[in-house]
Amino acid sequence: MRKVALLASVVLASTLIAAPASARDSLNIPRQVNGHRTNVGLLILGHSTSDQGDYPQKLAQALNANASDGRHYQVFELITGGDGGFLWSQAKFTPTDLQFHRVAGSNALQWCTDSQGNRWSARRVRVDRALSGSADPTGGACPNTAPANISCSYYDSTGLKTTSGWSTCWQKMDVTLALIQDTTNRSWPIDDYNSDGLVNAGDFWPASRINDAAEPCTNGRPGVVNSNIDWTCDNVLTGADAPHVVYAGWLEKFSLALLNTHGVDHVFVTQKPLEFGASCPNYPVSEQANCRMHTTRTPTVSRPFDHFYNPLVYWEYRAVQQLTTKATLDPRIHLGEISLQRLHSRSDDCYDVGITTWAIPASAGRPASITADDAEFQNGQEVDAENTGCMRSDHIHHNANGGWLMADVWYEGLTPYLS
Image 1 (tube, rainbow, N blue to C red):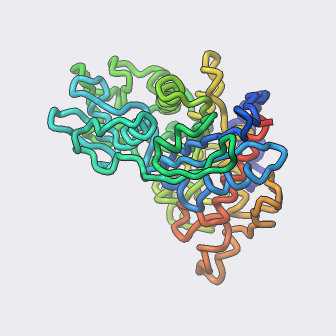
Image 2: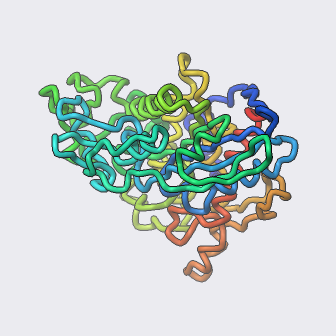
Image 3: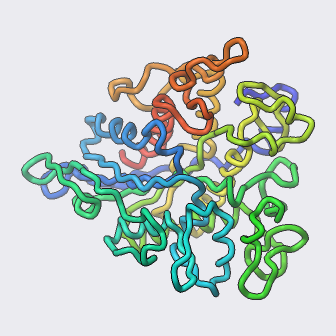
């Protein structure tokens, strides 16, 4: 991020200095199992950004190109459009579930109601069905929850083989790693709501930012206290209602289900890379007239970047920090980036100065460099946004270069664990 000198000390002191990366000891994943290369399944979980640019396959390509590693990496995608967060954490919400109404905070395409009045998270049902091989528990109420009929490659004692079918492929893996690149900025947005330069226990969800149908609790409480969401439904606002704390709880609950119910060996979590999206209303009224792609601005403590990036995406790093620095965190849950905000800061670099340094070796097929997205803006017009920089013309999703950028951040973060 390009910071102005006047604000540098304030911004760095209040927002950008996150907890240092913890020591990354090897997970001691064997390089061979029963005389053949270890088959490592990469379970990719995230929103549509993860699908654009095809970062999962680029990551596997880079890992498989590392001859000193010697393992075989196979991608399993469970990527879904829209927000994650809450709808990763639980599949079924009965009408008496404390958070039953909160499901309605998400887009109606992401959940459904069955004939008994239960609400279901379509994305979580898809995960559970893929990893357990179970039938549709919604009775057909939620469409498109069956796992894709994928094909895969794997090694056995006779060499490289191929097969198809999600369950069949998954069972061929010797080790499984889940990679979560999450967001929740549309339905339950994290932000520095009091503009003090940090998302902390003093920030709560303004009820005005949440779908009215999602506000009530089911224990008779209104779910709103002093115009803010009372997530815990105890009619008192405490640090437990802070968005980043709640979001971290969702991620932990989902991670533990992957580990303890579905047998995943390790889970890695990052935030989402930067985006623009409909970010202008999230800036002060005084700035909104100039809010557009490629326009620069003076960084502020609450908005510490010189472009009009979506601050709701930026501040999600606080939930990942809250999770990965928890003293009692299950040791199988890890920060996926080499350090907090690495994915956001690298995508910021790609936007305004370009990328020239990499963790992935050139021999893996990544580009030598990526020109900055800002270079596409010529004479007031975008020129070839689909191929310049990392962002596609919508400036939310990523082109092929952006896929390499995300793969590089993951590669950098994972390789110490794989050494």
